[in-house]
Each structure stands twice: as structure tokens, then as C-alpha cells.
Image (cartoon, rainbow, N blue to C red; front, side, top):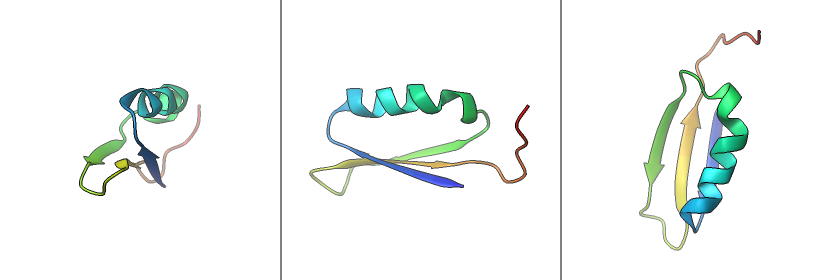
Length: 52
């Protein structure tokens, strides 16, 4: 699963990350700030993850 977060202020990203924290273990997180005015964070979750 891939998740994209588009935001303008850092606190907006932080709030979303806080909500997603339980599923982010082992996820790959990449940031891109070249597409102004928005900043982007891309999250890729590992395949085959099973909920406990």
C-alpha cells in the first residue's frame, strides 16, 4: 500500500503521521519538497503485513 500526504506546514504532516503511527512499523518514508507550494511525504508499507 502506498500513502501520499500533501501539506504546506510541517505540523499538518506531523498530525497525520501521529494518526498513522500504529501501521507505520517497517514502512519506507520518503519526502519531496520540489513541487511547490505543497510538500509531499510518500509512505510505502511492506507487503504481507498482518494485523495483530
